[in-house]
Amino acid sequence: MTERMDRRFAALRREGRAALVTFTMAGDPDAATSLAILKALPKAGADVIELGMPFTDPMADGPAIQAAGLRALQAGQDMKKTLAIVREFRAGDDTTPIVLMGYFNPIYVYGVDKFLADAKAAGVDGLIVVDLPPEEDGELCLPALRAGLNFIRLATPTTDDKRLPAVLTNTSGFVYYVSIAGITGAAAPDPGRVSGAVARIKRHTGLPVCVGFGVRSAAQARAIAEYADGVVVGSALVDAAHRSLGPDGKPTAGTVTAVTDLVRALAEGVRGARRVAAGA
Image 1 (cartoon, one colour):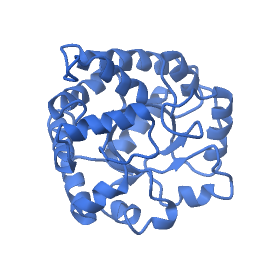
Image 2: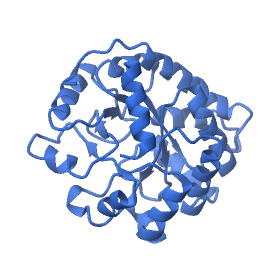
Image 3: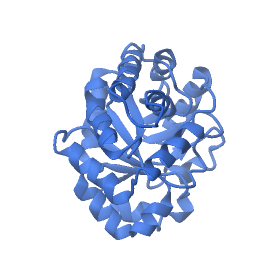
Image 4: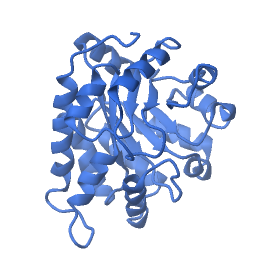
């Protein structure tokens, strides 16, 4: 576990609350606005930041995040620019953990060794690469761990007790529990089922368990935060940014605040949760 991630979750445990983990797409709607959003997230209440790496074929993502990735690509975003955004963010914030999330293809094209070295130098703390199963750990997971980056794995409602140990092997930072079967932003999570799933995962690992997919409101975030160590919100933030764009698809004066206003509401929800033991 990188020091930033370790310190952040340790501090949250002392506070007795869950983390708010926010996802935005690098370069959406353009690099400058994406950086402005990123810089504003911690003050608005984000504890951990996931930054999407745009890709042309994001099969695990719903329409909102797919569209955000395409907007970013059309605006000229690439891996080099994504790492530059992280580097610029780090110039003013050396405490908020940043996780790059996406697919293996752009990393492979960039070059695995070069990517890991450049990501670490830019200030990236971890990776979520949704299309690399544990059986492919040699491709990226193990090199990432050797480079000092967390490799965060996804567990789903269909990850049974037989499969879970394989998923958790070499996982670090936190476990990302996908609360619904399907693509991002598709449905709302059931807090009752989430509590049971978090408890089951915690029987297998001491890592924090963060829950995402389908969380869109402060009330949903509060309900999940009662059981989970973190609440991940992505599609709702991407939607907020998209709705703020002008008729030409360009950012407006309200684009950054459209995202941060929602983050503040979600953070209030997370902080207002009454913590319930879920196998912790």
